[in-house]
Length: 434
Image 1 (cartoon, rainbow, N blue to C red):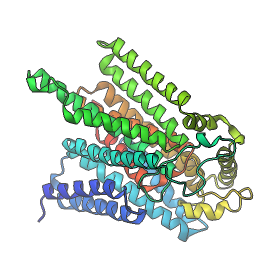
Image 2 (cartoon, helix red, strand yellow):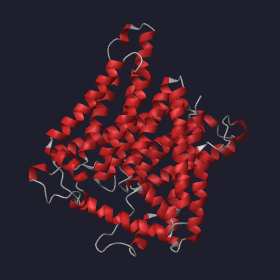
Image 3 (cartoon, one colour):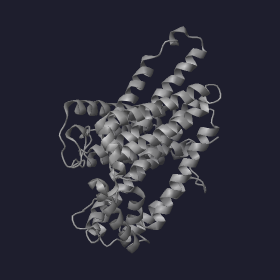
Image 4 (cartoon, rainbow, N blue to C red):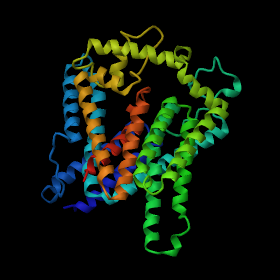
């Protein structure tokens, strides 16, 4: 009989392998690795059921209850889909994503000491993508497809949009991935600072100088943030602003009372640096300015057309949707699209869910997000466990950043982002408020 400790090690390895394979492998391989995590978790649950220390009871404020309702509605939507075979493919992907979340939640509940390792692995992967993005920006890579409207730009204002190593190569995918992962990098930096301060309190002279790991995580945080801007992904820019707001709000809990001036100075410095970068870098200024060009920018105009067509799809299928999956969406979207504006999705997470699974699925998903955010905020507010407060704060920041990016893009449904998102959601679920 395999012991629970061995199974926990195997589950941890499989979880970390999901993040590592996300950097290089296609979606099918990543999904198989995640499926291994689900299988090991089910086996552990069955094998050590009597000795499992965690309470899994659902309550009215438990996000898992809303997620269960969402899944049941998706099943009904699948059954009623006019393109059952295509929808089944998307449904199986949903099963893997939700199964991965359901596997990570109990693991984190029983192994909170492994949270730094999980977040550290995500942060290292993000750092690798940051280095890849920096090198691509330095080398001036060519576009693989039309990634920006350059018709009204001077040649010197055309941005080199980096895409890292994620497959399929797409700067918006890298931007969304970094939006999900950069909070983990800042979380590891804060974690190292906290560890250092605890050692200082024990009067260990060797800790008076900054630890190499602290400086390394700070460098990684700056590098990945710069790579995010180098993607030219405007949705990721919005996500980064959400990150900054969240990080400053959380840091106020620790700094406002005793270090108010330092906190205000840091906020002002961040705003100044951001403003200076936008004003002084021509390509970045043009990219940010295109966000407000409305129909004059072809990318904006394309999205507006997709939103209009997708909303028409929703109105005709508001109860149960058309069935999950981008293949299913694309087939039915052809009946609604404006000529020459084909699309793989609705380019908005919430509109996509409503189109695919109906209004009640959207309500259930919003309920999941609301209870998840409430749980995380209460934990951050009330808990005295600084280490876990840091990681829950990073997880909440990541979730909000991903949702902000998902308001205007479709890459949320890519596995590289999905598995990070569900890991962050599992962290918030597993850490209950005091």
